[in-house]
Image (cartoon, rainbow, N blue to C red; front, top):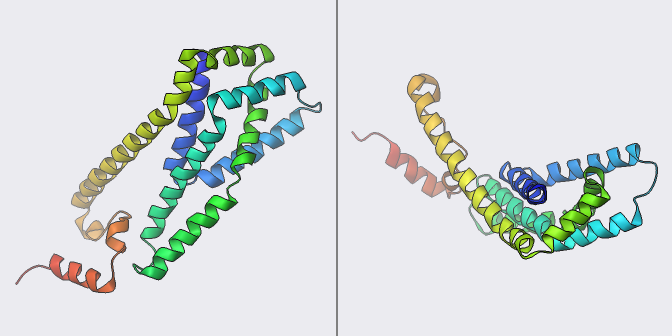
Length: 211
């Protein structure tokens, strides 16, 4: 059970960060913090046998793919955010594509994956690492490693849907309670702001009260 929870926590944590739209900064900060704490707390190098076992475990659980999944998810989150803030034309789209390309190049997935070795060394003994290796080397363990990315993506989708629904309902309720303040309040809807000026004017005209 502990072995299963180990991977679950990593997957869920990564996708929750991505949902919040700040995975790059949060993951890098956490990685740097963990690395700094480890260096400060441990004056001796990692046991080479344990390190080799941890790296084998990372291969079994597909840690590199996990980090890449987090990168892909966060890229889409940032793309959606930019859609509501740049012009709806070829230059605007080119700007977004350039940002995503640059972001993915600057995101050092190998460095983040490397940090997992130190994190596992910090939280698991050599005996526990060997137990994890045994579990993930089993058919059940391989299925857990294979299915968890799919489960995590479904969790992320469900969480975003629930968040959007709750936010919409909360905004309606608050606007009803404070009509004089919140009449024009809107959530960050990228689709509405991602309109050409003419489309925006037409939408506004359509929303205006009819004589």
